[in-house]
Image (tube, rainbow, N blue to C red; front, top):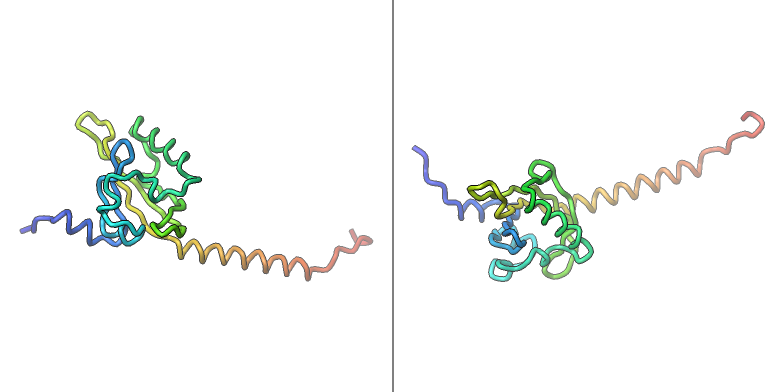
Length: 153
């Protein structure tokens, strides 16, 4: 015997943010993970534009892609992760990774976009620090290499 699935409980139990937007990009679902990640309570986020979490410099690119996806019903981010910057309510920068699912009407046209989002800020910082350290070590190594002998060249 299978117990009935409580969708609201599931959405709030998931550690990742789940955000659903309508065709115009207005937020229609904002789970507990989204509140924890971005700092906005559901009452603050619902009905708002995704611009509340998109850095200003990224908005045009985001909306251009969003419009194409809603018009065509095609996205490459259903199975491929998209990694982008985001912004918290208090203004601090985040690095997020997400996939999206298109919610379609009976006639197959997109009505909503659902995103499952993970905060990768710490992983991004660690990766950036490692890249910086590798560059420093490569520079030190290059500085200690002997100059080529012009006579033997």
